Amino acid sequence: MDDKTEVKIQSIDNQFEKDILLFLKENGKSIYGEIFKQLKISGRRGQEAIFSLLNKGLVKHPEKSTHIELNVDLKA
Image (cartoon, rainbow, N blue to C red):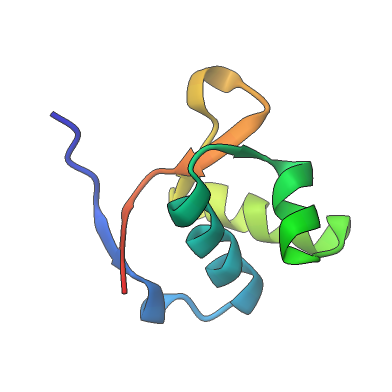
């Protein structure tokens, strides 16, 4: 059973973080480069947003891989 914390997308203030979370919800586990390319985010801004999301526990690195995925249940 995988009970994830529920997070409302409206509670996310940073637009880059919001875009990344929505991208991961739609596309599933992804690598940084693909996220930045699809969302047209600079590497620096994207890395800052992902680092922040990791620190907040909203995303995770599954099995210590180069991918990230949602660590919460994202609601509209």
